[in-house]
Image 1 (tube, rainbow over the protein chains, first blue to last red):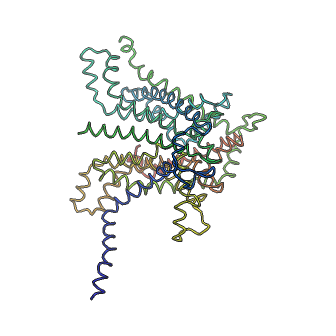
Image 2 (cartoon, chains in turn green, brown):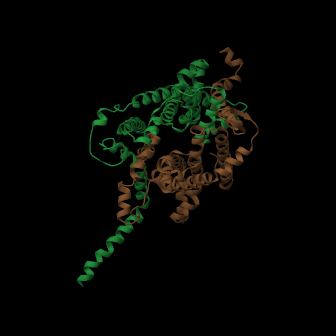
Length: 277
Length: 285
């Protein structure tokens, strides 16, 4: 009798656990998937506080705040970050202007050559980066242009345009044209209507497109690698450092970029939620 | 006002011109130069001349067939893995996320904002020989005492899967989120089991997302060389590694160009075939 009494809960505990797993399989899967997605980020942040013994920052040796106090203590890192930010700023600015104009034309006007235009927007997004980088390099080689800051800029604008078009287009499609008609009925000129009605309404789409272009530019390694010459951007710096041991300062910068991006996105989420209620 | 009115038809072209000119000059023309370089012979010292050397392609493909096949294998495995991981996750966020939807979505794309290379280096740290994961696997006997995780095909495929996961998860989420819940309810009212209503209603309606997601993952995965370089050894080298080193280290431009072009053509053929199989009319991107 006693053995039964003891073994009964023992037998049912696993089966209860199994029933729980079966009922919440989807949620468990989602939690595991999110853990997998976030694990490397946790590692990046954790190892920015590591105090590595040798050149390699692979194993946990001890806690230190030194790298956060002196994020630019390693030579070349600050310059690389400045180059990356400069290129991202001007490339995303130009790509946003060019992309927004294309998006306006595609959504607002009927014209011949729409199919070809869509194809030209679509292709850069589906071409492997290595092919795009290599083809730009052959262009510059054939024209005798030496690669450097401005060839990186050219390349970044080229691959960012399509993403801006797609983002801005999504915003223009969803907006009420009657607002513009109303403005024109009230005597506003075409230009005034654009400036005072259209532009403010599609501004969130333009800002989103600009942010995506900026993020893509700062993060790009493959295409930049082909067209950088002697110029070093932040990803190129990391690539070079990977061979000889990445200093923990790179983790510090990575964490900073991550925090800025997440803060921006969180603000956006909260803003939307407040507007929604 | 006058000019705009009289020449209304020119407005779209004026809007398009600067952007399309940029893409023509710095996307289309370079592809032309790539094609032309792939048919030249010569060397960096004596210069290159156009000789219509189609043999560049034959040489490139016969010498590096192994790398092409490996890229195809790794990219396919990574795409399937990303689909299996992302679909339930996207499903969960779309149907059970409630008011946390946007926040959960933010968690999915957050890693995107740590530089690609730093993310990959983090996997180096995770999978390294004396790291936690390897230690645990060894202690439970899943990994031999001298077994490695880093520098194996598994590490490379895991890295590719991870790095392109958002490209899979986002389109899946978008297509699942758009599904009208009433359709699923209707199926349930008509006595479909949960599995049936998923297979007959939800899954078919989410196919556009599956199509877009698998392409957006597979294409960059095919051309990738970062994961093989940082997480693998030369024995895991993919076609991207060959192209990169031919261009930037060995400077054998014609053969490098031929390899790039062969890669692009190969991908286009695969994509066309895939679109055919999945049924194009249902899945316009």
